[in-house]
Length: 359
Image (cartoon, rainbow, N blue to C red; front, side, top):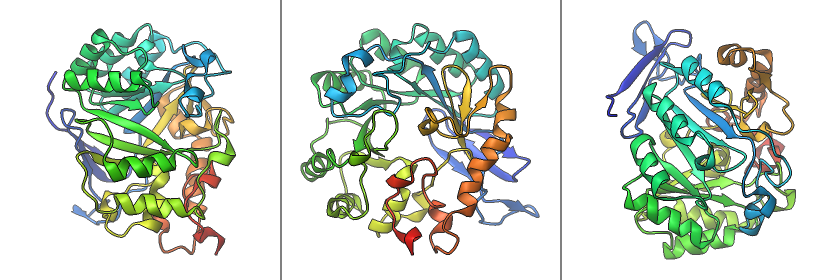
């Protein structure tokens, strides 16, 4: 279903935003003052523009240790934690409340979304509400039917880099159906050497849209010893390979990597950088309807608001969400780059690629 550019004005925080559901193009203005753009970025939206929905409560591959075997330490800990998947009724509730407010859903959780028993309905309900669904998969269960559904409903599909034949097979199947396909690559002390080598040789599947690099964090199965630290000399080698370099695919990063980008690159435009969206532009809802500013708080639940009998709006405006936002306000008050990165991750500070805060 083709829909033109969706535009809205945030009355509370005084800015315009627009999203093209066909291309994924997104833009927002600065704060509007006296009818003019002030060129000052708004801190947040009055409702999440992107919602990360953990529709999967369990991982069908979890007990086999698929992630661990692939060299990826699942931050949702699908090896030990098994909960019920989100019900279709609860998902429909979310869609109804987000209609006309949220641009995109990132479907995820503890397992492959394409294995949810109501996978087609999840995609269809999203699109019927003019909300673009995207998701990440290991690729193990990918088949022709799933690929056709992705083509019909999804904006993009990401395949986790699991270093297996099923990874390549899933990528090739999605590309065959002309689906915008990304690879999600987790950067850790173990995986950074491979990332450097693959960038040097441009050795990623031909035809993909982008490689998105995600920082490993010590959450769930994620071990602290795998967290990259700023004193690791390999980090500068890695960023040198992406700083202004041309590849047959795009290079992207999760917002957690912004401090590293600011510290290690010179040619990446600061206008293309957007730091942590958690609690400001996006939120995460677990399969059992707990809403968090970020999915990395899925086990500590330090900033969780139960929406089982409450609304997304109430959660967004809650004290726990405001407390999370205050972490950004209070971080690194004397740093010249504060407005660009806001101190990095409040949940996993050890993963912040910066030592300015120590000064």
